[in-house]
Length: 95
Image (cartoon, rainbow, N blue to C red; front, top):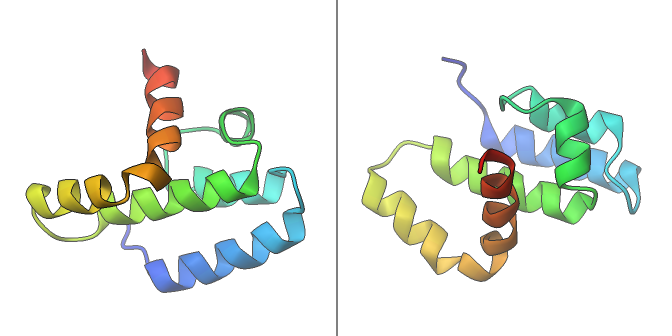
């Protein structure tokens, strides 16, 4: 499995978001699709706002970082306001 340098990833994501403007573009979607099973097109459709992509990346970081399941759940619950919409969109994609 590929190890991700989350600090570098977040810095690169911030740069791409700044370049993207108000709409998720191919470059930003491509950055996320590299570490997910979603295609660039699916990411653009699910998360048209770059701010949502940043929240998605933060959620993925929690999930992918080391730590036990309870720690991860607590981090997600503690940030439920931030992640609620992202989780809903992801689940809608799969249900």
